[in-house]
Length: 456
Image (tube, rainbow, N blue to C red; front, side, top):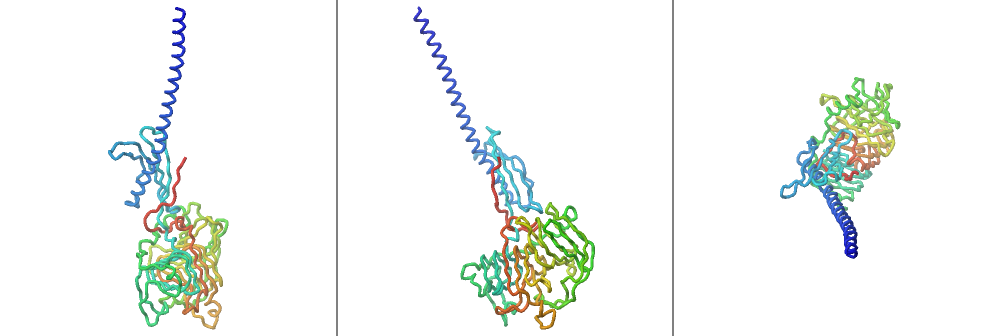
């Protein structure tokens, strides 16, 4: 009996130990299984979040102006069974940031607490992706150097140097005396003595760039400037001089008197006018808007200085009348205070380099002449003053983008000889502007992916 009791005791002890070990083992197995399922859910949540991003991309491709689709959507398998959900949050474009930000949070039905978040940015290309863009024929001379994409809806004569693609919407065009052809003759869409053709950098014909669709809505800029930007409408005799300062402000002067009028040629007509300041009067100092709101001035504007921040300056008069459109005149060098600064200049009509421009001029900006030229007029190189001294200048350099609806030039000449304007021209594209353009600058094309990140 004693041995039987011992056996029962051993059975109970070892049975208890076995059950304890078995329950622990089963618990461990169940925990491992649960963790395995959570790991699967963790991976599936990322895939579901990606599905939300793909849906948002599809939505924008079919309705590019509809940003009101934030919400929670079911994620289903091919048989229609709901496996999880994704929550889309859309941040719409603004004047300050033209990109669309989309955040998608994915989770499974079984483990809704296991979530993955993705944030992406999509943006349309800004017009300032071009170093130079024009709606008319253009001639680049031997002393002109261009760095960046160039497109013309007309023909291009290219005798200078380039480092990027040139495109023209024309297969052929009629070259006239303005491009050195007398009598006129038919030429390829892009031609000239430059080496871009042999290097495979001339492409034509390509699709036309519709200037009617890319001009900015000036009424919108005016309304935003009145609401939270800088709006100046006080009528003055000739306009305003805006001088940007490296401390993030700008001095504004009333232009009281201009230099004596002189004759110039804009490529179509003789122009008798002055674009140079003779007398001005200080009006006020303004702090540049931190909200990237525009500066809208309903008069002609002279501009120079050092820009700190992201700024767009508009010169326009509304409602628009053909003989009342406003222009911007580059009064002197324009520079940036730091690498994060950008300047956009939008003129209702022309952006001009004046007669008394500096001998050497440097301009950092994206420049858009909506209905006119970006140019310096042809001034006759007569031997009498002031033509003898100021008709011909030395060197001009632009860093950014030039967008000119009508014909463009900073130099006038033929066969490698510059008679009027700047003897050498260097136009450099600013790559930072493609998806980070100046505020309110027009965009074109479809939305393109520019960044992806997973959020914690």
